[in-house]
Image 1: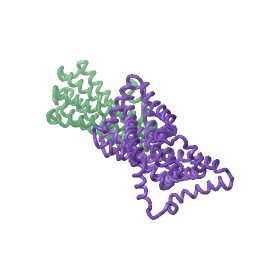
Image 2: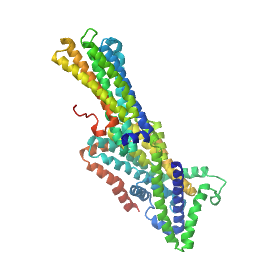
Image 3: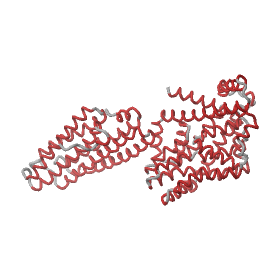
Image 4: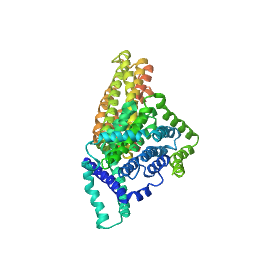
Length: 364
Length: 220
């Protein structure tokens, strides 16, 4: 029963992404850009990615929205790259908030907070390296575009690409559009807004339901995987983190599950860190799934997400001296919280609200 | 059967595996109890059993540590519904570990002053040893079956054994049994048997009692 439920939910998710793209197209460029106003610069786009993900508590939702917007040619690929980077930072707020549950027990909290924030530090370092590189060279989106072109049928033009998933999605999205614009004779803007709201609701619903279903379906596997990670680390832990995240469609679930284990002291930070890297990679599958209901540009931005996280992992993980940097920074911050818990509160508010909000106001 | 126990059994193969490790602890504990009491009652020399006792005790301790870690993971993954069951397993794993510890105490006693066939308490202690061995042998089975009637029957049997140990200790204290040197050793041995039986009881009580009542038995 659950596998069937899962297939239905996946279809609902793809329909929602398709509907979102249709909504952007129906509204037209002027209205869409009104919605996306203020994210023309890389820093503003980064800030919006962080803020949006913090608000909806799901990078899967925000990256899927970016895929739909890029696929509908309403958000330039070059800018969307930075929004995706922001989503990557924003998603780490969830496990940091989970770690706050241990705030009353000093030593437990120190370990839990360090376990949570090493993910933050890794993602911030990755952005600090890749944002200027992408801004000056554009290598990330160019590499993704090249890969996207090779993954798709080179003989099929944009208009002739017979993507069976897109055809199945169109069975629903086209009649909805027809109903709103033709039968009910709503204005394109109003119809677009209605479709956008419906699709946002459906994306959130489908992702939450997929995550819950998968979590209950593979709870034993998750447990076995975590038990393995307790004993050893390295590449296997990255694979475990990625596989778990692909399965539950949420990096927050993977990273948050480890917080009590860090707090209890039974999972070492060094052993848990590769799992968070794997979770970063695994979460990119959601955007790739979403791109199945989108266009070539949708796939390209989804691949940007994948390449960004693969690149960051390849840069940080192999060299122990570099690999330990995010962990040591997290430990240092956690020690500060022992002096005063206000450091923790200030950190969460600063990194996930104040700085991105200030950045957006400054650079929009 | 308590709801939490049913839930644990149905919900996860992992908890079954953890419970199996726990029963492994019990089996190993019984094994070193047998070796140590053989040495304490003159059926084996301490040198012949020392290595196996200490190595097995280390294995029991490692199993307990692994069980603790795995229970934390289990509770993290499955949430609050499994917490009572995890707490029970955490508690009774400590009892299983203590059975191993008492086996070492019995062994230490065998090095200083074994109770030999000529001693006045030998036959009585031999009987207690056999009865405790039988109780320990049933503990894993009763725990796995989680049958209330079998658990209650085993609890009564362990309580009767405890009473016999107390009676012997009382007689040794009164001076009605044993020589001075033998008396101390026999009293300690009877006491260790009683404590081992008490830990076995705690394990079995998890089948019939809720979490907060574990380890607590009203004075009889």
